[in-house]
Length: 115
Image (cartoon, rainbow, N blue to C red; front, side, top):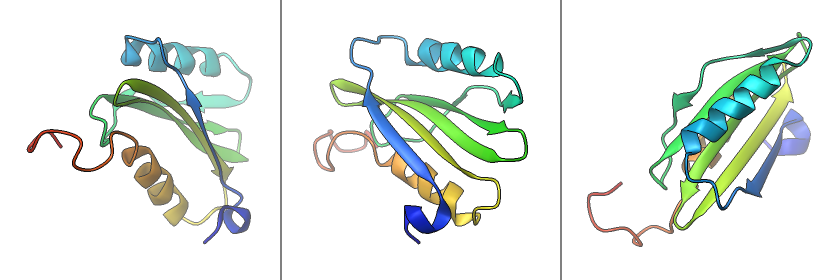
């Protein structure tokens, strides 16, 4: 299924210069929770190839669901924001989680057993 078919959007931005990934995720969660009609879940550790990653889910009324993640990707930090319509197929969530999990150094770049 392509993003056009599901209505999903995923944006990856650089957040280089951030040292405390969990703190950034918490600040984003708190800021988003102040918006009207927005419900956010607690920040949790997220599985990602880069190792350290934190994220949370959100919903806007009965219209949109989404996920925000802050992921260490080698020497860089990536901020991921994904959203999809409430009626999107359940596979969209799996696809978003898979994309977030794929962020990090290229396979083989880490010592054996690190991931």
